[in-house]
Amino acid sequence: MIFSEQKALRHYLYSLFKSNKIKIVSSVIITLFSGLTRGGSIILLLPLLGLAGITGDSDQNSRAFKLTKAVWDILGISFTLYTCLIIYILLVLIHACLGYIKNLLDVSIVQEYKQNLRNELFSAVINSEWGFIKNAKNTHIFNNLIDEINNIGYSVNLAVNSFSTFALFFFYLATSLYVSIKMTFIASLCILPLLLVQRKLNNKAYKSGVAMYERHESLFNAVLEFINSFKLAKSYSFQGRYETEFRNITRQTVRDEYLFAKISAGTSILYEVGSAIIVSIILIWAIKVVHMPVVDLLLMIYIASKLLPTISSLIRVFQYTLNMLPSYEGVTNLLLKSRQNREENGDKLTVNGFPEKSIKLSRIGFRYDEEKPILDNFSCEIEVNKTTSILGASGRGKTTLVELLLGLLKPQAGKVLLDNIDLNEVNLADWRKMTAYIPQECFLFNATIRENLLWVKPAATESELQEVLKLVAGEFVFTLPKGLDTNVGDQGVRLSGGERQRIALARAMLRNPKMLILDEATNALDISNELMIKKAIDQLKGKITILIIAHNQYLHEGADETIDLEAVHSTLYPN
Image (cartoon, rainbow, N blue to C red):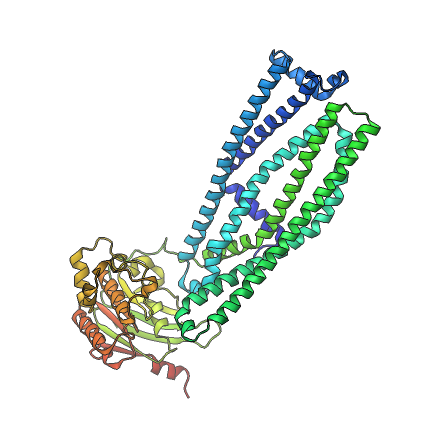
């Protein structure tokens, strides 16, 4: 994790307060007024006992009675049973209305914080460099974007309430000091041992949070892995293996959450018993030592019954916050790393048009981490409006070469030149708008064929869709019962592999690219369909720049140029 426990806590609280200062301060102010109305109604209710004749005349000398009567005299209101009851009802009504407003305000604070954090993280991830995303675990991103931010949101709800609870704590403390400074001091001394015991429980709460964060990610990983390999797992009859693994993870998750529940329950027991002891001490001191009036004694007991649970509530919120901190650290860590790997385009040159002559790779060097270099001092030239064939066995750098051309990866040495302009100096978004890339594993949305095609060109007409499908041997779409409105299923599962590739090719051509890159995109097609694709590509020759990566040799026939990475690799690593 990027923070220490204390630093992470400070960072979290600061980010929370900074996210919505006005609403948080408003919530605290409303709570203070709510506390005043609550306290006023209680202070008012107790002297009513004297007015009703329930307590003795001596209790009319109590501080609570005198304070209430003094306020009545200032306001010019007669101090009677009926006026007290009317004011009491009004105070309760105001308290209820303030509580309603505060609840809605707190919900908006929590939801806005979650929304902003999730949007901020998503924006940072999608605007980061491909090299960073390529090395990141999908489950790590999913878990932080969904589950962990929800966990943080629950903690934010508790934290916002704790700000208000903290304000109430000071209100109750001030009222307690007004009634009896000595008794408040004695009660405070009794609380100190409870706080010392609490420190050990807090440390366990944080460690439990670390374990739960790791377990949630394992759970996401297990589910996603099974869904991605569902067909293979079923064909191998591995359902039992996955089920056993999933049950083990959920059992460990329950164990971790049960451990935290024990910590929280232990805190409740600690303060419940502690409260009983402190109230007993207050009673003994009030009755045997200072002979406190009944009204003040009742008020003191009421304050203690509110103050001690308030402290317990604040401690439990603090514990849950510590338990949540690993989630916040995980989200913040991913956010910072994504920002550090942001793909910058702001100050780059605007690309006004496709290169007029060629795209050159000049003395390129690239390797993944500590591996052997994929490309070392490599140079080649791709002429505009020519068809270039890229040959080489698996692992020789064909896809790496394509990713360098698209600016998805940056060369560690050398340059990619658009005519004479370094690709690192241009706005990559502008450059990519002129290209169409079809990888070996095409991606289709769980939507209709029409929606998948319109993804690249929302304003495309019906005739444009039909023409582009015919171009890539996609006439099969017109034989489907719903035609273009056929839902393809998750990742195109309702179509065959060849059909998926043809839809992907049609989508690419609808983009009207200046450069088309086929990265083994026809491998899933049968010979007849692949020949149709070759025919379509032949029709594009001389009109756009085409790069072809394919295992079938005849697809390379007719290429204007050939880049043989096998020969390059043999030069790098001679036998």
